[in-house]
Length: 368
Image 1 (cartoon, rainbow, N blue to C red):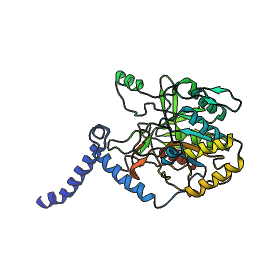
Image 2: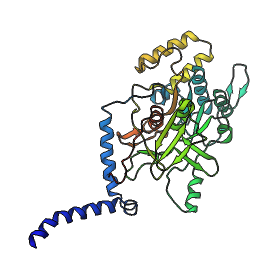
Image 3: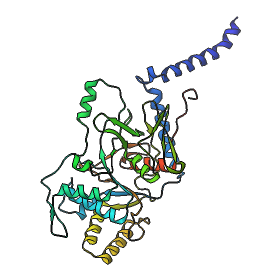
Image 4: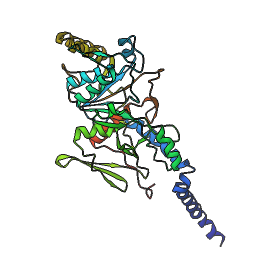
């Protein structure tokens, strides 16, 4: 009898351990004590960093227009936030170059009637806000940023109403001229690291708002975002000629960002915001030779070999955002690959994931 109980001890210990692990991973315990989830995220971050040593194929038409120190020096005398007419000039030159889409990771919460007006070539004068809205409409491919609630957390109606009152949407003058409104909200995990995003959120007033990265990818692939197919654990988007993307989502509606392209990735077509404003001035002044010379100088100084030809942003999916530090335009936070990353990179990483059909899929609970 004693021998039999000794043999049963390892079995009982194993059964107890497995039962305890299953209980801790159950929704009841995991939502209150996310100890196992925290361990999973830590090992997940290590795997993401390890994967950086083995680059995957990436989309070749992703671009980044960065608001950086060079921009501040180039646009000396201007402080952030820039007058709306400056953003309008940026849109104007990117459109002239033939950019496929331009997504602003910059909020435009209101109209600014105090900005100086714009003198056009025909000597007419346009208010700064109107000029920006006009260029957005003429370009036809601009995505403006919004900050809807993408937490996915179940709260009381009063809390939901309070959160909605803090949401940031552009005024109708801008929103009605944009191609789309794109969500830029970054919801970090309980440990402060950004790992997941929601493909879309449904706002009671503004309707369905897709993540900016999804919108950029949809523009490239021709995905029909008006007819998504929602199934358990996946979101299906269809496009022309049999194109289909199946995005794996968790029970909160989030999916993991596939961090293939950090902000300094050399595969990005990248240029300073201020440099493009200078290019626009040369273009508007009718100086094509000086325009090409300036581009060549920018190409050499930046070391970016993707700045090819007289229109390096032709056919590109462009993200406009901040790469500044210590300024009120700073947008940094923790990601699996860096504790102080530029969060603007989430947009082209989401777009790249959808375009290249590369997604991170979690193992099922029974496997865990």
